[in-house]
Length: 71
Ligand SMILES: [Zn+2]
Image 1 (cartoon, rainbow, N blue to C red):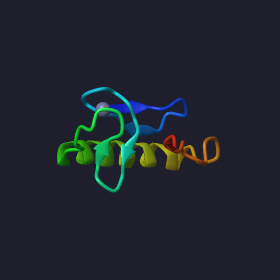
Image 2 (cartoon, helix red, strand yellow):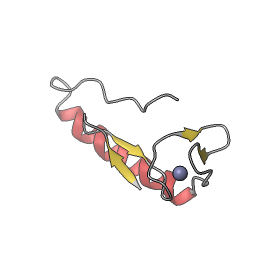
Image 3 (tube, rainbow, N blue to C red):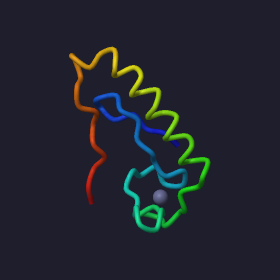
Image 4 (cartoon, rainbow, N blue to C red):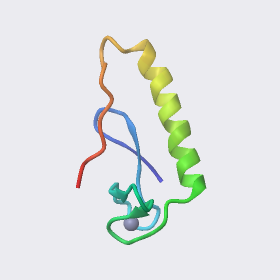
């Protein structure tokens, strides 16, 4: 699933448990171990591209997209 953080930036969240922490080496959820699927990656890429396009027009207002939380 795609989650929007408080600054409006999309973040990938686990389909199984909804958490947003992933092991980026293995591409699995930290909480439940669910794998990140190619569909998930395509989804977040599209959401990030849409967010970047939106943000480009509003860059003076919100220049720094939110960063995902670090474990
Ligand atoms: Zn999970």
